[in-house]
Image (cartoon, rainbow, N blue to C red; front, side, top):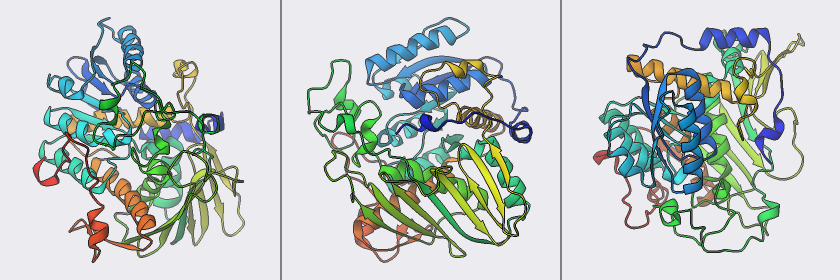
Length: 454
């Protein structure tokens, strides 16, 4: 099920005020348009890039993709959007693009298994970076990305945009930061969308890849599997070879949201269980049912996803629910509700859409309109930090903690036991088998990044 099916119109005066109070307006203007490059010109690559056009004077000079059709389409649009009218250079290999070393900002929106290597190379090339979540598909990849950002002094924003979502910023300020919610008792995070099943494609046969797709480089360091039209574009999320399932795709957002709201760092331990319990005939190999408990010592954050059956709360199909002594805060990309425990009035806000301010959002293909304001805020925060060299709101280290925690949940589910995490040693305590799984094997000739030698 497409997330856009759940779009809701609506914005409140308070949400508008929250957005206005948050969005940075003081970042230093560049003497010339920012030189921008994008690696991964598909769905979210264009969504991110076109939001950057909306908030900054930029010139897109470089685009990279292994899909020639996507690359051509994005290049045509950027030629129209560039005030110079110049067509961006196009590449099929990110290494050739980054070898130019002429980018101020590099956006990375590849499939998950291709986040680490381009991000590290962009750091070496001197660009500041906006990289989609998760940071990597294994813990060591993700750790190496942090090391590269710090070594080369780069500002890196991860696409966990809940930290820049106007109505969620308001909810955090009004009910968490103010102390109104009281002592936190427990937190639930969840996703009940039927996003694993691709019913119309389950019988799609393996074929030769289309001539416009460089499938060898699309697979890259991941295991080589026969090409199937389910995989590209966007269907790769159904396979653990290219990502980390629904935990890595959807839990990472909600876990990151509650970590940000509540000021949490690493969980002390992670326990997870589940599997393919319903759709056993499907081709997807990610779990359709999974629970994970992240123990933050004072309270637990519990994740549930189920890609079948009815949703427990149709108003909150993908959400974080924070239970405090004085009330409960339900939060999603679409809305929030604060429910006082004493029976007082419920406080409700819808998401901010900004469609009057940015009418082009109404017609942009595949844009998640409800997320556009958060992407703009995320981009503005990146630009502010580019000027000050401060850490952005979704700094690479925060993205690493949320991403690695979700990876640990999948490893716990795979091994069938609780994993105790040592953030100083960056290892699972007393579990050599689990630690051996922190680094996925890379397919030759690609070399797995080493945090100590990026």
